Length: 298
Image 1 (cartoon, rainbow, N blue to C red):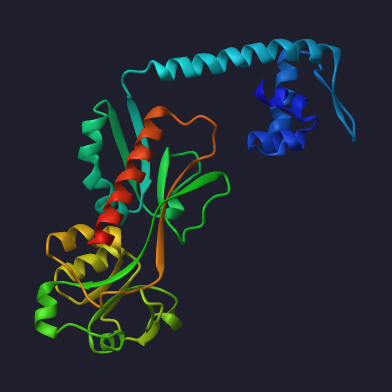
Image 2 (tube, one colour):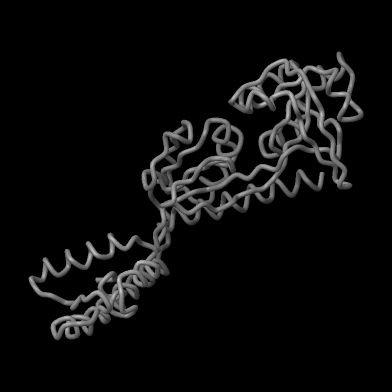
């Protein structure tokens, strides 16, 4: 009904598809299904225009009333909801799940005790549009065109190491000093794995050639190695903030950082998001933003 109303209002399938945020074939199929269900042609289609048939005009008049009532009922039900309840299905790479999501679940449960979380951990290639309510993905992942990507935090890579490592090996004072240290670096293209680009808050830049002790394509492994004193790592602020607060890691080269990093919450494109999902998304945005600002101020 909504597809038919949009086509009638927009006088065309392409304009209706843009208004509904759907593909043209999808809108065409929906209207055809409706006509088949009614056994009546509602629209007269030509190469230049789309017009209502007599039956279409009569049907559209009733459809407007029906859809208005549906929208009003939807809003009324939401406004009277006393409890937010149900399951929120999440997807996240393991490092985000462990260091971003897990520490927040207890507080979320206190706010919304009747909402449960179903968390699936994997790699980005495992995700499928529409399969999860929310999927957490890094800024360099390729998002499916059928999902909305909402940025949660934008931060940068901090240079940090355990106090034990720094006690044994000394603390770098300049980016060039990293050439003499054991570095734990996220795997990149082979020809650039030994080059580290850094920026200072004063606008200056540095390019350091290093010989990594280890490269890995999993941030959690590098973080674990750094906590155990294996070397100096570069990690997004949100992953290391609580370890720095606990004194298990220390930032080195204050003022210097590496490439910026954005964490996105992606979700299926749809007009109405379940209340429980919206509350979780708002909560996640609120808490990650507060954590980033507090650490940045610190």
